[in-house]
Image (cartoon, rainbow, N blue to C red; front, side, top):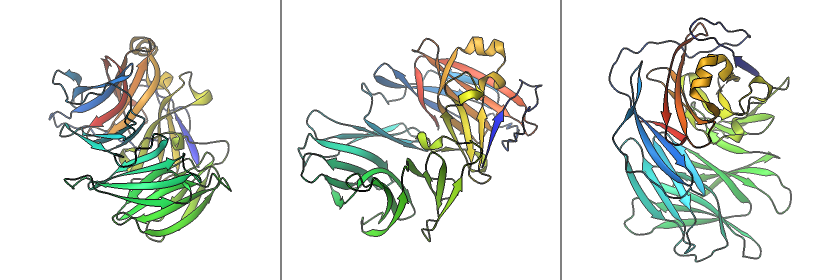
Length: 373
């Protein structure tokens, strides 16, 4: 596995390291507006700023989204244009808030109006087109109980199925008709396992031992299940359930396992914020990982932006990253140095490893998610 560092000068600078980038400079001449919806955090509240985007211009859209939340969620799951938030409630029933940013449609779903257990701990959430899945722990029981709940989104009544586990569920992923659950044996071995369930019935299909220190699971762009660790990652063939491992070497440790991003761009690359360590003075910068070539690319602001642009944009750290495949541009949400406001920068890197275009817009709040509508 190799880590690549992007050190670029605006328009004229060439790559100074051995880095290569596959995000080609395919100029999109289609002037049709490609809208972004940026979720902004203002204190403990969340709002949305809509943006208009063409291939060469980024502007604020005065229209208002119906999305607005006055408190920050306890858990969230984001994929594509969909966002799922979970809130613990004073009545101990729990509440889901779903929002589709393409259609600007919201929905609220009660999670636990049957349990009346205020010691309930929710550990992971995920949604499909038909169901919301939530894992939870009943810490007040002796012994502690672990469960998965599947809530039917198409039922007019509160309809759900509960399944008991013998290990603590900590993360979800799904593909085709299978639900994958990352679990932790916190009572005996402290080892992780992967439990595989039928997505519709929650019948158990298989269980795989994953050893120690698994951090997260998610599907990559090829439909493979990725198991993130600190020093390696596993790739699960979802048909055979065979696992192959990619070991990181030479001190290179991509940190996508510490991110919750599921934002993929061209060539199956995952985009996420990460700590660049000694490669940048910024604490979090845009990063991508190519699961085909097993290569990480770190985009240092000192290289992407001129000193004048760094002073103008007032970037404190990266807070969200996505990729617009229509315009071949990296979308970077960032917090400003005032700790209150933020902005969005779009950057296109051509096939000669040059920054060929940059545009930016300031925002009244800190971007937590960027949706391409």
